[in-house]
Image (cartoon, rainbow, N blue to C red; front, side):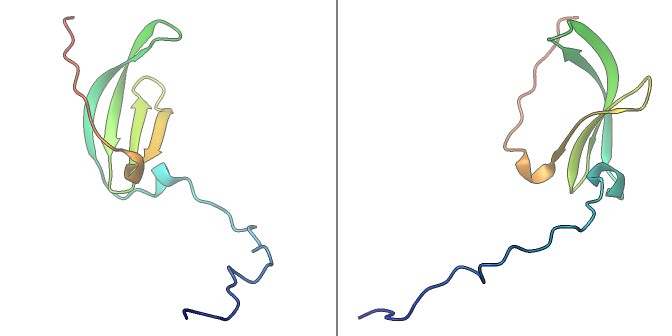
Length: 87
């Protein structure tokens, strides 16, 4: 017979989550960067940006005002598809 004792997943108390979280794209030490053109289909506009890939994050930064447009953990990226533009 296997395991006749009680099985518990944790102590039943919630952990205190008051710890401040850092902004991941600021914490990246280095990255590989490419200039890209981003197309926002919802607003029907294109704008120049930089795509930065670091061990921790993938980030798109708008060139004009240096704002982060998109950021995601590198662990969340499953695959890539390259589309060639006829512009």
